Picture 1 (tube, rainbow, N blue to C red):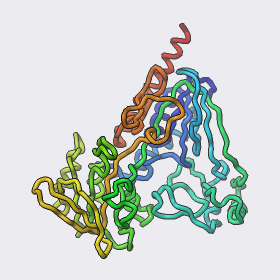
Picture 2 (cartoon, one colour; picture 1 turned 180 degrees about the vertical axis):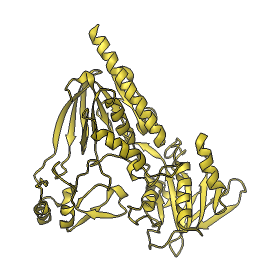
Picture 3 (tube, rainbow, N blue to C red; picture 1 turned 45 degrees about the vertical axis):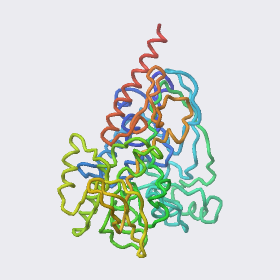
Length: 424
């Protein structure tokens, strides 16, 4: 890679959009620095069990892009890092990154000896805290880079020393400190992604208080073979099979008190979750509470498949509350919009389809960016500041990839425009 900012693009965020933008720009001859704050790439997509509507595994999209990254010397990947500061202008930005210690060097072979030497466990962020991992852990089975991480909580303890002694390759560095990296780039693609809306703020639904009320992203991990329950959809309270399941759409979305917009993906994600339950339990029943169904274009057939299933019931209603009976069954209460009848339906498990909140709305970017009323980033081509994926708006996976390709092109156009101005 060169150090010429006029031919370099910084991509902030290593989810599906960031990875896609990076490889697209690099394969047409531009240098790319891809920065991800977590220990591995993949973002939210890596945590999915399957994509809709084909229900294929996320590895279908991620692995091919990881191969493209490995084979392209124009891409530099920096994990466990965030942008601390940016100064300059299009064609000539100076960027400072702040880095967190991994305590494991690139000499790691992912043999797992360090993990086997660990004595304590920490919350598994990949599984949204639904399970625990050893204090020396691989972020996930398909992690890129394929390198272990040592939890900072144990640094300075005898356990950390034992982990270091267990490594045959000298890849454990317990003295690693937070650091900084200085970079130059001519344009920036913000692919900073999203986080699930905090369901505990919807007090009437009892998330965090009622054991068997979970969110849609947690449902993905329950259904995943490598998840906390090895793919079995079970009640968190007692581990019993969840055969009576309610899926509540627009949990906190399209609501002026929470997220006033539609996140686009929630309807289809809930139909996907209904498919998970029906595949696993032939005698299961699933109720989907909805305001409206968003199933445009090719997604109509996916919606129809669920709607035509006699064991999946669509209830047009926005539930007013969720309570709990003596057996810890969540009881969904409200009024059916069509029949005007009041209901109080008990389930084994309730899944809240929470919306996507852009990270840029919650974590102030290190540079003044144009953002809409909801915190999504509005691209500024004249400044070389481009948004990709959900950083730009609520998008599903395929739309995020399309957005990333467009962002790479816009970043290239910004660089070319800056060179023309400089030449004049």
